[in-house]
Image (cartoon, rainbow over all chains, first blue to last red; front, side):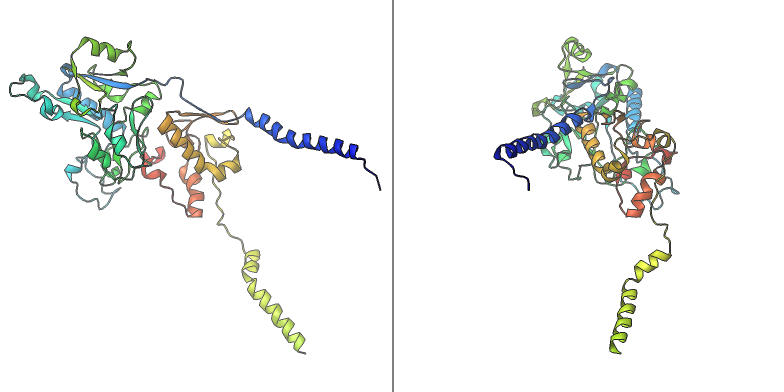
Length: 271
Length: 131
């Protein structure tokens, strides 16, 4: 039997303690180097607060049509006037046109700007088409209304939706003073003429709206409406004094929809 | 005498109780799924995580990716093995389906076997099915 002195026991115990501490430390050092990283694409367009300026003088019926088509096609927004392919989708029940879905659409002045209607309003405004969409408000009431945080305000000012999370309660639709949101009362797929592979469709029971083409901004491209508008729509950073939108706001008289409600819309109209 | 009867009876009983195991030993089943790696996935070899991690945790990874893309606008994922991916289920070359070209032979083979019905495809589109 070996006899251990107190001294040699303490030595061994001390070395063992160092060894116990060394293993986790080395593990930490080795895994630290290879953690996955999430980042933005290098070409992505960024802003502190995205905003839109629509020059109403340049918006014609033709521009409206092009813009709506470009947006709705790219985002797989269903069109209830589209004839359903009976082979692919048998027994589709008839449509109710009141349940139409839209992300950007045409509106008359009196509906777009009800607080600015006037008996002696300049006649040109009576039949001028106004393009309206989600205003991506600074104080978005829909964001406050959403019980699941499916609708939220992104850091760059875009009011976005997480369709995965939407439970279809439609509180946001009640909260939005601009009617910018639509509800999928039924499966939208039979009414999409040609599904665009770049964006998912929605499903029955979720709300949808304009997302300011966040999927395009992430790739460094401007929104579809800007491209299709022939110069009528400009999108940029409202908080950057050097930006194109700020230059337009500086040079022109602009109005916003229902300003008195205090939601601070980010869509401006050059009159 | 009774000892022999009891023992044979016990033997028969054990054989009968374990019959499913005997049955499985003599027959073969084809039920086990074999997801196929086709096209780009076949030559690429390296996925986001290693094979077994992917098999067990791809749903958590997708969940993490979704939050990152939708909430933080971060769409690039550089994984621990140094490769970068476009955090997307079905859009673009560098997405899940961009590499695993055939959803039916890859995703569905296991999902059908395990009787799980993820509702990804209620909204997301399989580029192959669109045409």
